[in-house]
Image (tube, rainbow, N blue to C red; front, side, top):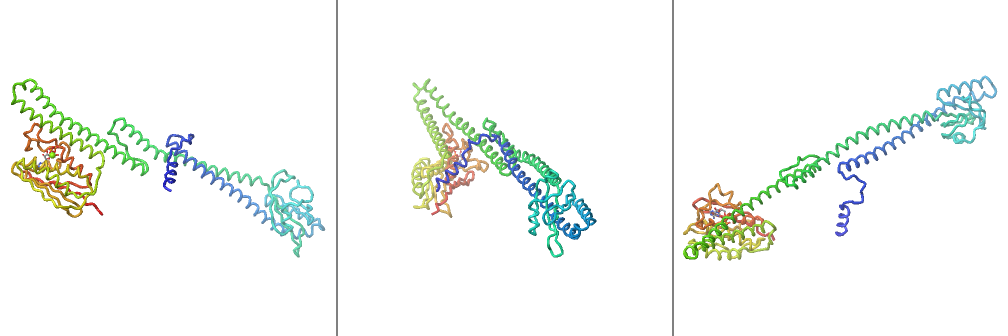
Length: 498
Ligand SMILES: Nc1ncnc2c1ncn2[C@@H]1O[C@H](COP(=O)(O)OP(=O)(O)OP(=O)(O)O)[C@@H](O)[C@H]1O
Ligand SMILES: [Mg+2]
């Protein structure tokens, strides 16, 4: 099922290369779509309305004519009774249908039961026998039927209806036929069509204008976004878009600005990082080069100088080694997520404490480890946790004077495992506390107990590395410190949920 869904989505989202005739420009495409849809909508509405109105016009005319036919048929009962015998009344029949014809604006014709013409209001119609036209067939059958046909006497299309003239006992005495020219009806229908099409055109023009505005409302912010992306790609990192358009595009603009801001910040940080790293590498390298030059000139005969310079150069190389190690670890920690495993941290902590204990003793410090045999499991990378603890202990030893104490403890508190590194050292000034986790930040290199060394003890990378690792593990690090009294660094890592 899934492969099928994937294929369907791929087909749907694949760029349609086949539709070459569509305009490439988004605004033109939107406009074309709106106008096409509008043409279809308005066109079908016009066609349907026009057709309905035309049908209604004819039906209304038919209905009116049928009504008149009924009335005239009723009125003609008596005149028809006497028409054959009394010529006077015959004339009155002609006058009567003449006036009715004038009334309806058409022709009134009376035929006898054999459908032979008796009287007509139109002099152009000769005496003749009506064929079996539908209106007479219906009238004979007692129903009503209209018929539109070509009238040979006046050479035009006309609408015909017929009604029987019934005698006293309901017997047919003849039939009355009414007809009107279709020309006025066609003219009225044409007028209606013109009006509807006119209204449709006005609606269409308004729609086209509205579509242009709507298409611009969507397309222009997208064009801005594209132009700004191109400018940023060309190196103008400070460019931003003005969020505009519909909500979705406005949000896209805001997100784009945030992204651009972040990229700019990251690049600035990276540049600063490279500058700092170059600076940190340059001074020990310069110092090594100067000492090599001195040794080349005076080293041969001066063993004391050679011994001293070699010792200093060794420490510079150690420093460079640690700096490069930190930089590489930092790059790998920030580059990709560490491989985490379910871990009881007590093992890692005991091993690190063993490593540091000797160093602390050599530095004249009392070292105390308060670690339980087991801790709740956390998701962690053992090498990286070891780097965290080693760096914190390294700092504690480095920034505590001889005779001081350094301690490592761990315990489970709530949903976290808490690792605590404390010292009775020189502490950190309040103003510096918020900055100590920044890369290359050192409170004051001269403060370091080992600052007698050429490079002042550290590069200021250890704590930024510690924080990067702790955050990658979903934890956090806090520091409490008092100048002259000591510091406590507390790392909290979330206990693995089962
Ligand atoms: N336990 C501590 N006591 C007093 N100051 C400390 C302590 N830990 C860190 N600091 C201060 O914070 C600064 C930053 O520490 P960080 O570990 O990042 O750098 P570093 O120790 O100077 O160099 P690196 O660790 O790269 O060798 C240090 O320079 C130091 O001034
Ligand atoms: Mg350090």
